[in-house]
Image (cartoon, rainbow, N blue to C red; front, side):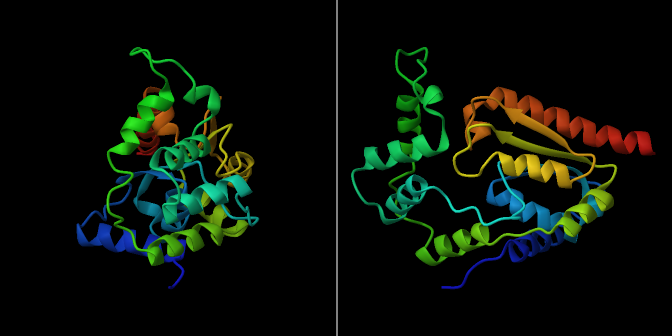
Length: 230
């Protein structure tokens, strides 16, 4: 098994964009979530002039080695190895990705958010495993050992300008410490920090309407930046 690197994954994205001839200047609005946000940092270094807006969502620059909590590690291990009953594994995953206050909210059908999410995840959670263990190991290594230096982040801010740069996080994210978003914002000059209150790791799932409106605003501001420039 070989570890993946976010730099190599970014190169794969660039190769795909080149193949489909999506290579025009200032033609991309990118939303990189979690590992995708780490990959996107490297993509910015490869093709800065193609980007109109970039959003780093629930992610980190890798200045320190953040080891997940023992609970998070145990949950991820149980999911990968399929240990224990289905409902127990999904419950553990939900508690890792969403705050308890959200999971316990009542819904219009008289159930809870947890009940609705259990039904949703059941549509795919126990399908035959598509990703081999080598792939899971590779992605884990890419996440754990990702590092985008201060000088690289400074270069991203300078070379993307005047593109819109946003850093987005939930203030109750258990997988990636929200402090890493504050750090990322501080190292990306001109970027905007958006913090979702009482939110966990998967913002587009927990607050879809709010997140979609935010996406629309970021895209519009990215477009406007270049209309003004021209």
